Amino acid sequence: MTDKNNYFIKISKYKVNPDTNVSLKDFETDYDGKNLNKDLAAEYLEETKEKMAIIQDELYAYNKYSVLIVFQAMDAAGKDSAVKHVLSGLNPAGVKVHSFKAPSANELERNYFWRHSIVLPQRGEIGIFNRSHYENVLVTKVHPEFLLKENLHDIKSLDDVTDKFWEKRYRQINDYERILFENGTLILKFFLHLSSKEQKKRFEERIENPKKNWKFSPADIEERKFWKDYQKAYEDALSKTSTEYAPWFIVPADTKWFTRLAISTIIINYMDMLKMSYPKVSEEILKKLNELKKQL
Image (cartoon, rainbow, N blue to C red; front, side, top):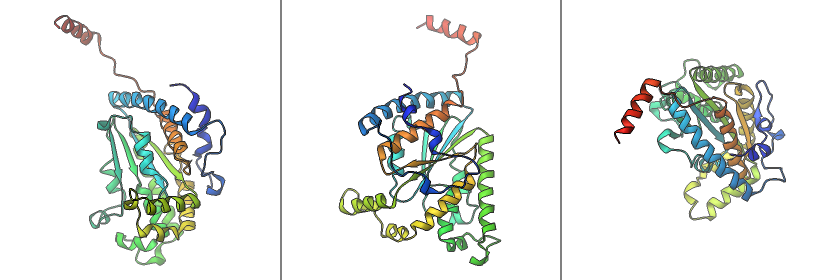
């Protein structure tokens, strides 16, 4: 793969550095460049798919690391399509995608990491979380009444949901991700940054297009009323939980072709940093293989 796409995708522009006080107004929701268009992006995306397939094969053979990719976003930001297009070139046997909806009664009887922990990728695998443990500092922060369903020992009423409570959850998330990282999991977290205007447009398309009607729910309109609250919840989460071992990337989501290219470029760059290689075969085994080859 050439370095062309790295020229257009400046990863540092989208990475949230640790201890940054994030204001989403400072990040674009659309691609603002002039040297990249949809056709060129499609060409580069095919190149990144080929490169990612090679790295995935190395990941599986090396068998010392796993990769966890987290997608979070407002409704209609394109999480499903990002997963579909960016990872379409991978071997499905080594990729597991998990979409998390509202927790079940069974899941609510356990700590909020449990349902995510049981589906973490094994060594050699890539795991995709479409929504994640971050819902517990996003949806629950906008709707703190949901916390009462978790039967928490320190939350008897909404009066107990204080800033101190949220600080504790951010710390727990950082500790959880540090444990994963220190045990060989590369963690990359993507917030697909969608504008309110573009979300409205996509909701309208879902209503008007018979092939997309099924994606629309009246609840989407209700949640849209909390747009500012969600933006603030995301700003807090991004500020408190972007670390060197589990960084957040705020990727423009108004233009899907750019979103896909940016995500794939970031994934490839970080997987390359793992410095993986195929296991070396001993001289003894090589000798036996050559002997077997003569018998073919």
